[in-house]
Length: 509
Ligand code: NAI
Ligand code: MG
Image (cartoon, rainbow, N blue to C red):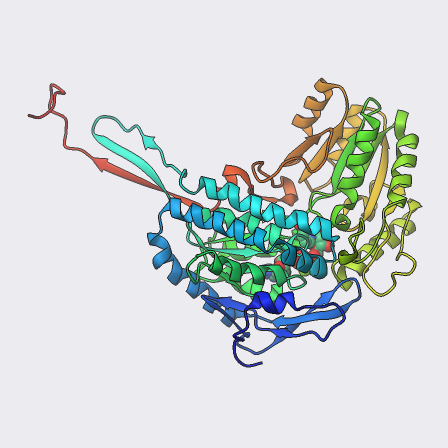
């Protein structure tokens, strides 16, 4: 196609059907409308439960990024800058309501595009609305400070919007991750260019149109679909972009951080993890099993904060693993729209990677307790059975590298020191957890675990209020909470020199 369609993107997305002929959707969303890529190229978006095409979207590259960044820059100095912080907050609330009004469509798209079970997708869409509401409330409370320089000066700070922000997003929670950084950026008064993952652009396109419907001026929210090496790389270095937020792999995070750093742009990098859950003999057994199952298999294990290493103390190890394996074996695997417990992995690439990790674990001598392959009867899409290994060599690849699939490795320990050494042994440091009924031990671990978040007697603890991010190779900066809004603010210091005070210090009258 050569020109922008007049049919709203939302209607085109609503008409998508698995197995039907894949339509081509112009998806470079610049200003008030979507257009094809300047090159005319497209890329295929797949249904991961079958591998067949769902849609073709625009394959954006440098020229499209330039158009989007320019539109965002114009909007920043245009009507958007005249909107009061309170009115900005009201717009974020309107967008939350608009998203909720379209929640069923958005959840269906996310289930189709990512492959995630529909109920989990519904949770993601609800989370996006919650994220907007939290940040909406903060929009008119971003206060500077008064700085004491003595009687001859008045000095204060104002928090200005950082400017035009780039958001390079992953495929595991497309709308959720986009909103995690877009909502605070908008609350801060920034304008944005979003680059959804090439595998899962659909809900981000819907978002651009819903933002216009909620009253955001054209150019405040722009979207460039395309591959990372083309659209993503151009965005990370574009001269009109003032800051870059990236979520994805450590390897790509290094590239984005280096590229943006070369242009002296601040970055927020939320990278991966190989997160340990430590379970002591004195833990609440059933609660620990529930938390481990949810932590390991939610979103098919494609979560940066998934449980991927279970460290279980000697006294309960065999009972715990027996129960965990039994419960994991009962999880149902099916296409996202069939709303089972586990969907397919997102792509052929991810499928090959996860199966490769499983194979290498077996070669390296780990004992397979459950799963290990494609479930029977589901041989078309990118499905993998829930998989559990024990007797894993801590030096082997499966013990050290992020798998990002429904695969858990179990390790024994007997003492606290052993558990801490194992938990902290990797270059990652996103999340670590501990299950124990000993409060002193829990707090010792909370302080000593090298991770941005420590969860005690539960998993996936937190929400939009709680900051998240990694230490070591797991990232740079924090998202969510008030800290997450400060990523999108720039401190301006304003100093005033007064006439010298009269010597008696009394008013000059
Ligand atoms: P990726 O990190 O390569 O992709 C994430 C985003 O970065 C996508 O939007 C992609 O288009 C973009 N991108 C890729 N190369 C780029 C470049 N040179 N410049 C700018 N942007 C670029 O992740 P990928 O390849 O999809 O998945 C590989 C592994 O990454 C997964 O197996 C998993 O281990 C990890 N991952 C971690 C996530 C997390 O939540 N921390 C999310 C997604 C993947
Ligand atoms: Mg990649």
